[in-house]
Length: 219
Figure (cartoon, rainbow, N blue to C red):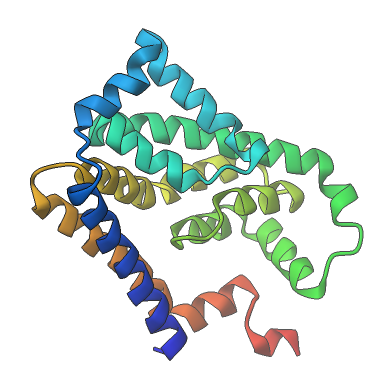
């Protein structure tokens, strides 16, 4: 691994440890208190959350923030369900928005972007699935590229539904464990995220070649 990649991993660990220290020493917040605030919408709280997650791509609000909030507010199981539904809704919104605007936005795509679009059109399902499995890739950017790349909706949404499972689990589990008393869950969540980060780094060259991003293909 390069120093830059190791630095990113160490930075991620530092941020997680800082959040853990912050939650312990300053924000003495219980899951029930956060839940009370969100469920102040009553029986509509889950629906309000899922609608917010669905329209989120239009205002470019980070998906990770809402995902962590769901874990904090609803717990791991309910939060996972609400995030999953909202994420599929948000992916759909971004996909169709891009499909309508894509022709205007990409009149003169760069050579690399043209390659990505070409591969995405050829292998839509597997291409989207692989991108979804890569952690910390911008969720909405993938949806926009799929819409602009004319990937059919059904393969796109199926690949999204499968590909977001690990990340959704990781975020909601991390969120639910940040304020929990059992620190074992938090350590497990951190370890899970580290695996998700390190595996793509190890296979980075192969993934870049398959995605059409290798330097050799650019020459």
